[in-house]
Amino acid sequence: MDKQTLNVAFATQKGGSGKTAITVLVASYLHYNCGCPLAVIDCDFPQHSLYEMRERDSRAVLENEYLKRMAYEQMREPGRAAYPVQKCRVERAPDMATELADSGNYDLLFFDLPGTVNSSGILRTIAQMDYIFAPVSADQTVLESTLAFLDVLQRMMLGKETSRLKGLYLFWNLVDKREKSELYGRYEKVFSFENLYTGYRESVKGVGWKASTQRYKASALAKINHPHDELLAGRFRSRGFYEFDIIERGKPRHIRSVHISERVVQRSLCDYALVPMLSRSFIYDNGASLRGKGYDFAVKRVTQFLAKHYRQHGREGYALVFDFSKYFDTAQHAPVFREIEKSGIDDRLVALSEYFIKCFGDEGLGLGSQVSQIAAIALPNKIDHYIKDVLRMKFYERFMDDGLIIHRSKEKLRECLAALRRLCAGLGIKLNEKKTQIIKLTRGFTFLKVRFRYGKTGAIVRRVCYKSIRQMRKKLKTFRRWVGSGRMDVEDVKASITSWSGHMRRFHSYFAVQSVMKKYRELFEV
Image (cartoon, rainbow, N blue to C red; front, side):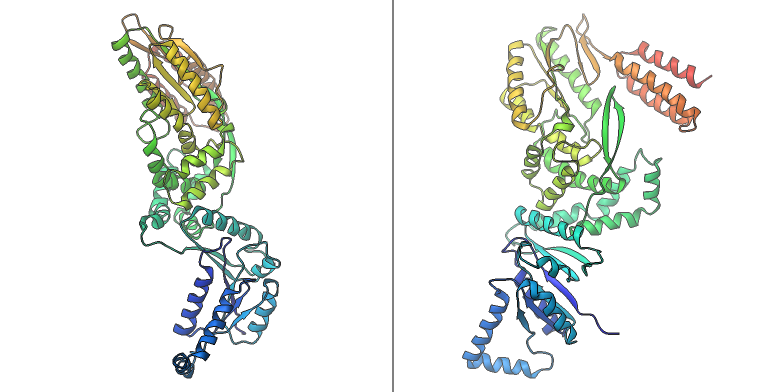
C-alpha cells in the first residue's frame, strides 16, 4: 500500500497570532529531531515571510565562513539536510502538494496559509488539508475571529465527501508569563471531566423519569466525554432547543429548553464560571435562581422589610411594585454581553456564553437555558445598584422581572419610578405599565403571586392569590384525565399535591388550601 502524505496547516483569521513561527518550530522539530521527511509550502501571499526567511538564512550562510562550515557539518549527517520550503499562490497550493506527494519523499506537508478567507482559492486549498491547527491568544478579538473561522470550516468541510478535512484544533499561543497562568487554565478547569460529571448529576435531578434523560444516563460517561473533547478543541456546537408551555405561579410561560447533553455543559459553565464571577457584583436582594436564594428567600425578605418598616413608621407608607414586560422575549443582547464581558472570566468562556444566548435568536433570552437564566438575573444589575446605592432605598427586592420598593414617601417612590423608566430604556427593557404602580401599604399589594398586607395590630398577613388556587384546581382536573389515560400515576399526583400543600403552609391560606385538598379527595380517593 502506498503511503499517504498528510497535509497540515496552521491557520487563523487574525494576523500576529504566530502561525508562521509555529509552522517553522513544529516542522523543524519533526524534521531534525524526529527524522520525519517533510516539506513546507508558503502560500501566505504577498509577504511569503517563511520563504523569505529561508532565503535570508541561505544568503547569510554563503557570506559567512563560520556558518558555511556549520552548514557543511550538518549536511554530512544523514537526514539532517534542510527541509524544502516552496512558495506559491494559495490557489496553486493543491497542485504543488500533489506533485510533492507523488514524489513519495514526504510524510508531511505543512502549509502556511493567508490570514483571511477572502484570498482567492483558499477554500479549495483548505479542503485538501487533513488537519488544521488554529493558534489563539488571550484576546477576545482573536478568539472570536478564530471561532467564527473554524465554525465555517466545520459546517462546510468537516466530514464532507468533497473535503479531506478530518480535524480542527485550537491551542494557546503567545502566552504572557507576566499574566496569571490561571487565565489560561480557567477554561479547561471549568470543563474538566469532573465538573461536567457534577453538572450531569445536578442536571438530571427531578427529571430522571424523562425518556431523554434515561437514554442519556444509559451511557452517561461516554456522552460526557464527547462534549468534553469538543469543548477543549473549540468544536462544541449547540443542538438547538425544543419548545413547550408550562404554568408557573399561575402564569402561562412558553419554554424553549436545551437538550440534556447541552444542559450538562451549561450547568458546568454557570456553576464554575458565570455565577461565581457575575454574582460578585449582585446586590444581596437580587433573589432569583441563585444558591441560597429563590422564591422563598424573596418572600421572606419582603416580610422582613414590612416588619422593619412597621417598627419605624407604622402602617403608613407605600409600595412601588414593578414588572418588566415580556422580559425574556424582548431582552437585548448587547447590555447582557457587556455584563458578561466585564465580569473578568476567560475570553473563551465569554464567547461560549454569548454563543449559547445567540442560539435563541438575535433578541431575547431562552426560558429553559441556564445561561439565559443567569443572563436575565445580571441584565438589570445597573438598575439594582442605582436604586440601592444612589437612591438609597433600603427596602428593595427584585426577583428576575418583578421588583418591589417600600418607602414612607410617595414622592420618593415617584422619583424611583422616573429613574426606573430611564434606566430600563437604556438597557432595552420595557416596563409593564399596567402592573407597575404605587400602592398604599394599608391597602395591601401583590408580589410574586402573594398578597401582603398589615393587620390592625401590625401583624403581616400573607395570602396566596385566588388565581393560584384556581389554577391548582384546574391542574387537578387535568391530572385526573391523565391518570385515566395511563399518562400519569396516582402516586405522582399525590407527590405533586403534597409538595404544593407544603408550600402553601408558608401563607395564611388555610381555608383556600382545604378547598383544593377537598377537590383532590373527590377526584382521586373515590
